[in-house]
Image (cartoon, rainbow, N blue to C red; front, side, top):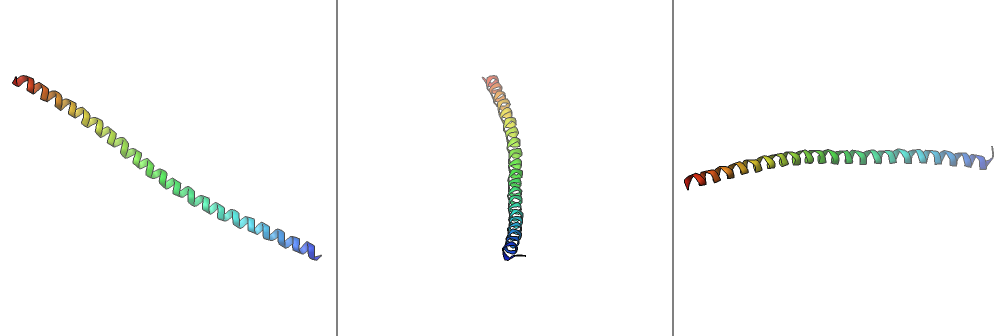
Length: 80
C-alpha cells in the first residue's frame, strides 16, 4: 500500500471520527437547550394559571362590590 493511500485512509478516519464527535456534542447542546426551554414553558404555564385564577377572583370581587353598592344605595333611600 502506498503512503498516499495510507494517509488518505487515516485522513478519512480522522474526518469521520471528528464529524461523529461533533454531531454528538451538538446533539447534547440541543438537548440541554430544549430542556431549558421546557422549564421556561412550564413556568409560563403556572404563571398563566395564576393569572387566570386572579382574573376570576377579580371578577368575583367586582360583582360583590356592585351588590354592596346597591345595598348601600337601598339603605340610603330608606333613611331619607
